[in-house]
Length: 253
Ligand code: CTP
Ligand code: MG
Image (tube, rainbow, N blue to C red):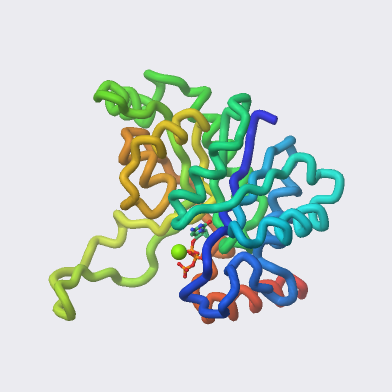
């Protein structure tokens, strides 16, 4: 397969506070990782899948993959994650064959993300690759960025939604100013990149960036947005879990 999805599922779920790895917490009776995996397995083109699992739940995770994927389990690899998301993504990228051109990195905790969002990101990465250098503003910016020493080339893609709350900059509890919301978006996953460029970006990255696009951009890559989807929200707190269960109930009609 020329494309792959890395599903990071090795987090502990501290903020959810259930005392078990978050990806293994059920949402309306089905574990987050199972839901995320099911969606990835519906993608039309052949896609390699890497599940990055908690190191102490490897056997359980392999059994889960067999259960969900059936014969397609041969396309799925399970690897142990690291101490933070950054390390877990790197562990996932490390096992992909070099024949993979495009990789999407996805949070298992965004387990209700529709398949259409994966396809939208894959299409946008492919279009950026096809545009090549010298074609379009993003490619020009990428070329300029790549001209700097040891900068990655290429264009990454993130799903994004407008920010709906009024946003303030604060110093302690004192409001400094209102931030212009029209210039802000919230980003989701899956985030898509040329594999070689993302690996290179992770190899040079500081650990401060909280998403893959941040790592990619800090290394000199250009990142573009495509429309996100409200259902791709990340389950972080108990409230999010309740919201996810409501979405599932609504889908069931
Ligand atoms: N993740 C991971 N490895 C880590 C930390 C996070 O694979 N060491 C994954 C999580 O499993 C999740 C995604 O990264 O799918 C987003 O992370 P987050 O929502 O922060 O999940 P947790 O780290 O599990 O939650 P918390 O921060 O509340 O502990
Ligand atoms: Mg976390």
